[in-house]
Length: 416
Image (tube, rainbow, N blue to C red):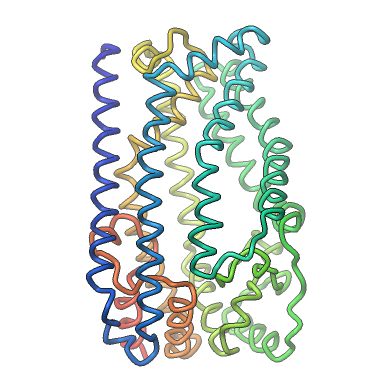
């Protein structure tokens, strides 16, 4: 393949991805707007028209911002590749570091990450302090926003830089099979991170306290016993410091598993509804969804690293994307910029698989608790989180990891 042909292919795929995302987002905006003035029949008795309209407006506001984000992100990729941005950074850093050394590579990838963060920052600020605040969800102050940003940067630097040095060293020292060694390191790092995160990293951002409600604690423990599930502890997280959205999740592996409830979730749901939501999450473990997803992600990561190893030996990959010189860090930077574009078709497949998992987890919850309790919990979460009840079917099929509300509730009521 010639550099010009690859450049043409890259621009064609980028243009297709941008147009596809834009088309689907516009469909979502129009579909939600068209259904704004009538609550779907399954929810007519539980969600008011005002709440339904708030959800529609919230969805449309996020979609409009998403449209701009897609365009700006695409422009950033073009500027950094064909526009010569990455080449300029490469040459500039050559004044301080030996080109293609590990230090030069770390600096190159760090600058690329900082530039991407700067491009995303205005969207994050607008999303938090305009959209989320405008719809009554944001509780984060400017000081907390900056504090979170600084702590995230510090954690990324402390953890990410040694990993990056290791990866670049392996890419240069392990010959043609470097991608297998890097994959093994990636697997080990992710396993270690899953063990370390709940105890050492997450508490840097949120406060976790043991569940104090004895009645709810007893109900949850009985559910865990019925399901044969062991957890290291039940914790409440101060999610209300940042947002009014509610959630619950599992973290850790093996004996280190923890169950975490957002305080906002406990404030909104009755104990039997909390139990039903937790039963849904237990359904994911019962069906081994977490391990299945990790296995697929691991396989895809191995394939992507092999592909990167092959591309590193193709001069057209570098010159076709605006680079005059090759190198491990340069290849990694170009790959990170272009992979989301070429991998766009994988997204709908992963979304469909995720929705199938959600149905399985719902079915499991309906066998361990009352299906109507999960339905009432979901309805409250849809209402309080302003989740649209009327997504565009095509948009939902491509992007949504959870089934549409009407389909999900109707299946649960069939179980009941």
